[in-house]
Image (tube, rainbow, N blue to C red; front, side, top):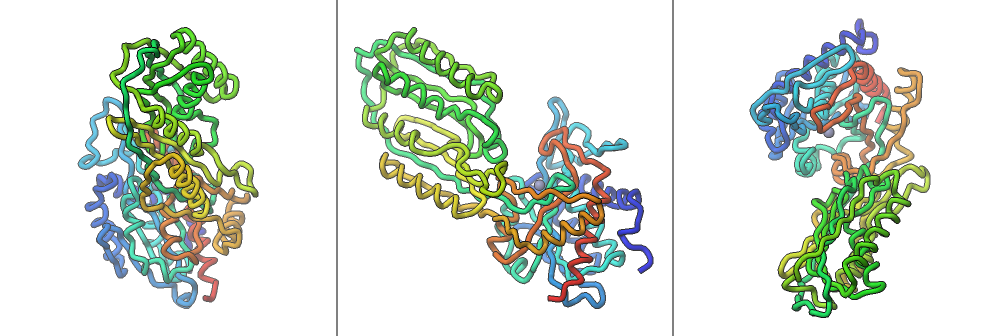
Length: 494
Ligand SMILES: [Zn+2]
């Protein structure tokens, strides 16, 4: 072997990978619109001489033969997703299904003009394409390339992928992480849980002379997987606390309760419309006291909380007292927030739940919850508890198809090899990272529980935003890392 990837210059590799990336950037590829990029990848891999499958979900799968003499080593999957999140800066004209991404390069970074860059996960794909165009430059066993669709909006590609494409493989290297030097070794599963019950209303008692609207706003909210442990207050739970505080000294009749926007977003606002026998000033001082309490405990993370009160005209109808009790008891019983930190790593969230939405209409109240767990058993535990609470409070429930967890395997052979190769090449040990969000890897491990997986990537900052940027100096080391790892795997006799 005259020239290997490992002795190519970093400049040469960087230019090669960016050339592949530029071809992807020229093709519009928002999630659910992958036809064009899928065809492009299928044609490209076919032209390389591989056996290629394009499945119903538009995933592209290709089998790559081993280097001579390495045919017996374990089958390894190289995987990335072809879709991207397309967002534009305010005022920038951009049609995500028709316009190419315009690349802007300086010495350190690659960005896009006015839009997200799509390094997530275009860089994963470009790195793989570069490697398979340079197959003579490193030893490798049998490889399978899997490029999936729709990672960003439902993972229908990974979900729809036929089992047979992962069931015969030993290793999977997912190239969809965002930090060079970090090895992702686990991800969370979750399930969308909806609870509802019918409501009965009565006319408000005229003895409850105060009618008020209470508005909670200014909380930080955020992604319920990434931000669940960063001290954010759940607006719906806070609204419940306010009602509990009112009922300590007065009576309450609830007319309306709303809050939150989605399963996976911590609610940053909530609104109550209620009647009470307390004076408006008393309700105001309860709300002011609640603000003080939150500020005392969460001042550093929730500095902008506002609880506003307004006297309004008497609502036409209020909840029957029994319905009020069942609803508030249910919200009280269901856990929202961090539930379990890792026994091995105190900084790692293992299980959490987010009460994301409460909505009341004329006949029904609906609550949306998202429990997450870095083991499927933890999600099951949540469901069990929620169902018990639902039974007690006479709520009905509906669960979406669960998204499986990828549970950390401390005995992972692939992880050991990856740590060895990375440390050899870079002079420092990579960090292990277990994430509390869902990844496609969960779906692969569900299809083949014996599959040994790591997730890696170049350093991509501010993904899913117009500020997305790629650290150019991580591109060549990443390619060398994958090539080095594949060489190590090729030495294994299976
Ligand atoms: Zn991604």
